[in-house]
Length: 99
Image 1 (cartoon, rainbow, N blue to C red):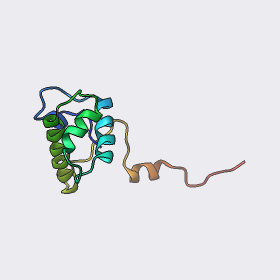
Image 2 (image 1 turned 90 degrees about the vertical axis):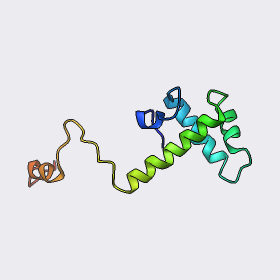
Image 3 (image 1 turned 30 degrees about the horizontal axis):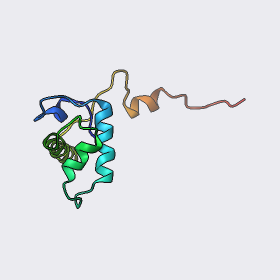
């Protein structure tokens, strides 16, 4: 779900810790879109660390980020030391000996 990355912090005066993001995710599972006063309940679930407006904006940014990912507008990260699948297959021994 949401991470502590900079895109998740837009619109919020304070950043979100990994722990707060996890609390946020759990609160969303408890308080669905049909819950009256959803954002106040989510903020309360998080122990008051964030306001109802902050959690609502965080959710809206999460929805926007997911839409960008699903639309293919977010490139896959390139990890240091990663090899392409073809390169990995080429470097694998053709015959394995089992003892």
